[in-house]
Amino acid sequence: MNIEFHYYITYIIALRAGFKPDDAYVVAYSSQYVDDNNKIFEISPGTANAYSNYISQTLNIVKPKKELMRIYPIFHFMPGIIDDIETDSARRCDGKLHLLNTIPDNRNAQEILQASFNSNNLYRTGIATHMYSDTFAHQNFVGYYDSFNSMRGLLEVTTPDIGHADAKYKPDWPALLWEDKCLVPSHSKVNNKSRFLEAAGRLFEEYRRYLSTTYISSTATQDRVNLVSEIDKAIGDYDGTNEQREDRIARYKALIVGENFMDYKKDAWFNEAVRKKIGFLKWNYGWKENYQKSHWFKFQEAVKTHQKEAKIILKPIFENMELENL
Image (cartoon, rainbow, N blue to C red; front, top):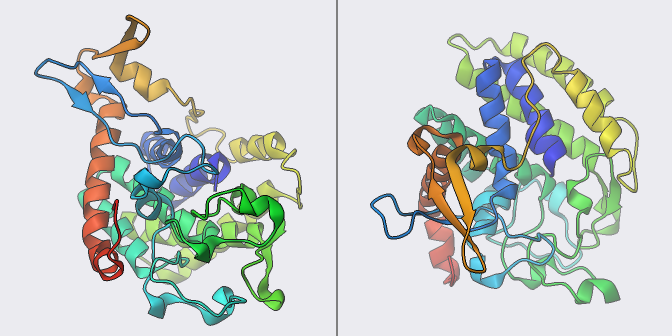
């Protein structure tokens, strides 16, 4: 998924589920910033406030780095439990199963999302939302260097078999129909819109259950139907080149009118917290006043907590596979 779901659609879902406008913004921004948090900063080095952040994405998702392999399963390709697999959705030409396979709406992803709710930390909820939503778009890929991800074809041979690098951006465009060459012919045609709408509906249910003191299933179900219908219309028709992206974003924004909408600006949180000045051949970074109350600092602390807790949940899988760099 990309900014269309991780920010705009997540923003819509959060509002419809009952988050206050300011809180919906924090959740949506945190969700999208997982993809933009791709640089390590050394802030105020040599002082009592020295700080280094963790990254949650690499600079180019189609050119991932082997040495940062922990990022992918923890933030973008959350492995499920084999029992979670719906056989029809994961029928591969080679008949393989994989312990790291990303399974939509899997129990590990649900557990981490619920832990974020229990923390009452909006930044963690946004980060967990990104991870959870990606289980729908990234299903049948693993967040590790493995031939399980390999797609046949001359062009695909030149890319590393990590995540959906061979498929490039195809799994992330909301209005795309494409072919997953790893799946059997009868199941290889992928409709991203269907996957994205299912993700939207399930995320809404989880948000509503978290926010409601009295959860009424029948009401939530009808509200989900209405919401998914709105998002369905906003995504619109098939777009094989993604050239209708800006039109779709305009339709998402129209669904948030009147809700104190704040658009996404990638560097807004960073600039709020960090000052920079030119040094010798590089930028030097230092904290601004009250940085510990800033969105960027709180987000970075949430990234560290998310990673720590996700690694605990996934530890049995990692140990069973004797994985390195994780």
